Image (cartoon, rainbow, N blue to C red; front, side):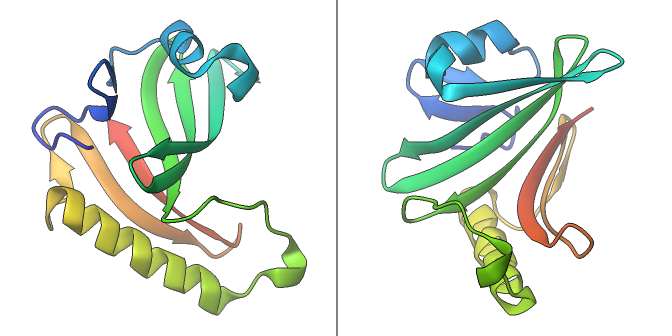
Length: 139
């Protein structure tokens, strides 16, 4: 799915996301009804797509554009449909288990390396926000 030479994320044989991707391409591929768009000010916009299924894997991905240039996207990945949780069922232990899952998933996709000429990718736990995710950043 992730091409470690180019930083492209392959959604299908006909659609990949890269630094050159535009918000319009995302909306066209995923459908307007499946993309949640938010302006963040100062030229930034975010576009979230939930429960994208590729083979037997589900993703929730948020793409961050600065003046229509894709700079960052973060995502979570699961082997089952991703339900919206609540703080009632949250635990740090569960989030750290997700972090391990994300690290293992990344390693299976691209190996151990996380820094590349096109940018970087890694799994992170945000203790203040209470969540784990994978972040891909383009340079």
